[in-house]
Length: 253
Ligand code: ADP
Ligand code: MG
Ligand code: MG
Image (cartoon, rainbow, N blue to C red):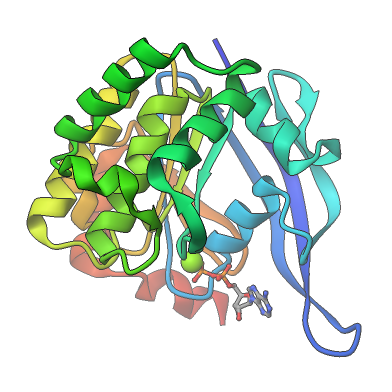
């Protein structure tokens, strides 16, 4: 049973001319395999900063606190080591990888994470089945990663990676934004499939409550001003749906 532990995390981001701005102000969160957590908060509250910090993005400086996966210090690992340790991060704005096909990208990623190249025959079958579940046609595998992808294709590609890489902890930043209803359903089904294995802890970061109609979180955390200000079960998402974030943002000003 894997556990991601975030303790009192403070993070600053480099802005212009060596200036820094503090974004995260003491984040505490524990995510265990088999659990689905939702982090919900207004724009600019620092949700993506949390994802980037855990991913190891060089622009984000940890000023104090810790992040561990099964007791191992993630923050001292390289980006590759974090992936090999079992972390999977789907970013809000996935980057294009010109000249690299989806098929090659997935195989390279699987090789890096598993420590050896997957056997070709089983791998081809695995990819084909995963693509069918995500309702993408086979030509998709030959396209360059994220090049000219629609919003729905980018997110399907992320879920494809998630299903094939089988991480211990998956952090999905705004996986639901910009999706039409069909894509949202396909992506949500993918998240639920992964979650139902009981082997993956899922941290779903979102601004909207929409995806939470399809993915039922065990825990909801309200994120405002760089930290968690309230926690509850999925009923908290229902309340946010009707009331919005006003009560928290008012208090924060
Ligand atoms: P959210 O994902 O909740 O919308 P972000 O983490 O993207 O919030 O941003 C939180 C705050 O940090 C915002 O005020 C944003 O402008 C600032 N910020 C985040 N990343 C950067 C960056 N790379 N450079 C400058 N400011 C940043
Ligand atoms: Mg679950
Ligand atoms: Mg964001």
